[in-house]
Length: 403
Image (cartoon, rainbow, N blue to C red; front, side, top):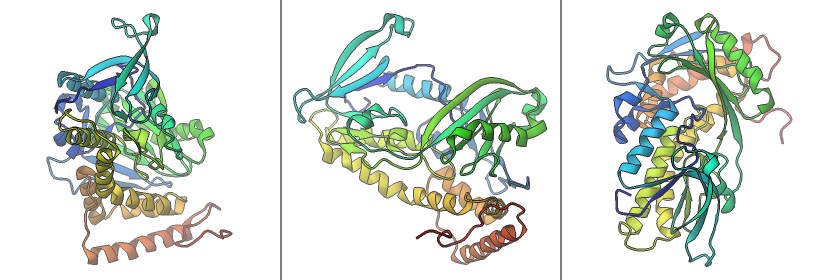
């Protein structure tokens, strides 16, 4: 809209509280010019807690001005939506039902919308409307209808479950600038559990891909692991949502592009998606603005593919590294113990925070990388030797019985 393109946004629920840890990197605050009042907490300390409850403090390598921003999605999303509206975007409060090209593939897309009551934003005054557009950016989440319409293909997904828990002021003071991450088969067989501070409460949650029916069991476990720190708290909201595990097979078709969760842009290992949703949306918008000469000519698939090429070139290394980390360190409690031990290294902390805060894969020091490799192998071997469960150990080859 800012570049001169007539732009519409279809938003189903204006006050939607999307289930989300709410963490955003420092570069997003600067890059998207986010005001301080929408940041609930500035986290500069983290605890990684192993299956045997070994705690490692993380954050010593951060500079005084560096932090992870903690937000509530209903606050962040509302700010971004209103700013888009100020720049000229026309916001439609309604439910996107589908779309088709009634004049063939070169014709416009006709969007079918159940538009809600303009005053109350509810379904009582709902009316069916249609909107003709030249280009569609599908930013409609993990269950994207746009993706289904263009045959974008499926992906594996995790279920994230989070409880917002109000705790007393003394307990809240403990989490003032602290976030906790718990790993272990009890809280998730393939992800982690978290306690993240918000404005006046904490978000306590977990997620899993491989055992979704047990998600409430894992949620009970993360509450138990957090123990006295959240004891006596009142659950004020329960949230659950699918999280994609990898990009969809197809993310562009003709004059339709997918971004954010709809495209599958959530990282493994960390489960981060907010920044990548915002960044991919901006990249797609910039490609349309440039390809259309700021709304003066029609764009085609070739124009949209410039966004996709730029995205893959910039962020594929990040996704690949985190995919490898998840496969190595989230496959058994022994590996998780080694992962937490590895996080005690200041070199690892510096590399991790630099990569997370500024969204780049930071090149390491070759000598330190070699030391880290041998240290990590040693940690895994020690954890395997000391483990008390009968679960599978970590290897660097194929699992026994695999072809």
